Image: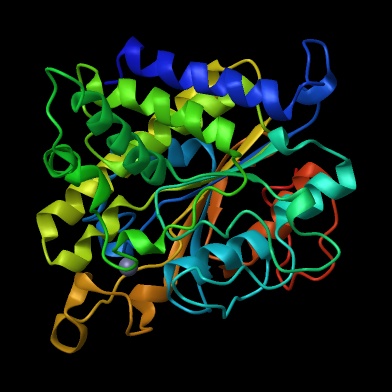
Amino acid sequence: MFQWTKRQFVRLAGLAIAGRIAPRLLPGAPVDAGRKVIIVTFGGGVRYSETFSPEGLRNIPALASLRPKGFFYSNCANAGVLSHFNSSASILTGNWQRVDDFGFERPAGATIFEQFRKQRRLPSTQAWAICTNKSFSLMNHGAARDLGEPYGANLVLPKQLLIEAVDEVVKQRAAPGGVADRDAVLRQLEGVLNEGYEGIGWTIFKGSRDLDNTVRATLTRSLVEYINGPELPSSGDELTFFVTREVMREFGPRLLFVNFWDMDVAHWGSYSLYLQAVARTDRLVGMLWEEIETNPRYKGRTTLLVLPELGRDGDVNTANGFLNHRSGDASCRNMWLLALGAGVARGESDQPVRHIDVASTAAGILGFHNPEAAGKPLSRILL
Ligand SMILES: [Zn+2]
């Protein structure tokens, strides 16, 4: 689906990042030693009924085929605030979060990014967050005073970079012989930029702060080539997958958080678009697993944890069914978690587990402590 030309431009950008923030990471440095963890939010809000229920399996052929190869927790609960930022921050901190719903506050306490990097003395290239949701700019570290920014993850908001790239495209086209019409270019890209509902509006952007201006300019230049190339990206999650894969190939980070979000298009009320997004996310997670299995920096040492960060309303009569995730009913809270890869037993369990257990599980795999986390390690993954 992605052409070589698309790969080329992010590759250029990736090399630029490496030159700036990781000059010591030369070939031979032991950055690939040890286990790796990739946490994927199967995201934007999806119900059991459209995924691992008997009637939902048709929407997720990739995950359905992967389930027998891993461990499936069929009863994974989100007992926290049912907003996107809080749900994802709970996964990354191990504590139920109650901060600003729209991403104007950092997660309370420490995220696993900071704990991992500080305790293991790792450079920022070893922890990344790549997020389709454009209000996740503060997700790369928490508010704990003794940790924070020096130990945060590299954060990429691919959509934000795309917006900046559009302005560059227009500047170029405004040159003699070109066409300056920002709105027209944006219309071409609206499928990528407008999924979802909460957080709409460009003011929500705070920028990918951990990417400095030079790197951002480089990424933007690269995205300009992407936009001007033979294919336009067709969804935010495809762009996120693409950037994720490039980051894996260039830096091989040991801790990676991937926020998919396309299926939140459900807020607009189209069930068919929602189902398309579910199927697309399934396909992208399947491709991510293929990358893990074929990339020598990941194969055999990586644990992939996939879970929806929240569900959607269940009862069409009281809460418009799939549109929102506000009711707090079982359809919003009762999720699943699929673990694959290194250290994972095969099987499944209906033992109750929680979203906040993910952080402690990642800590156990990667060998660091998160003493403030309320969650517990998932024993069937820590083998
Ligand atoms: Zn939503």
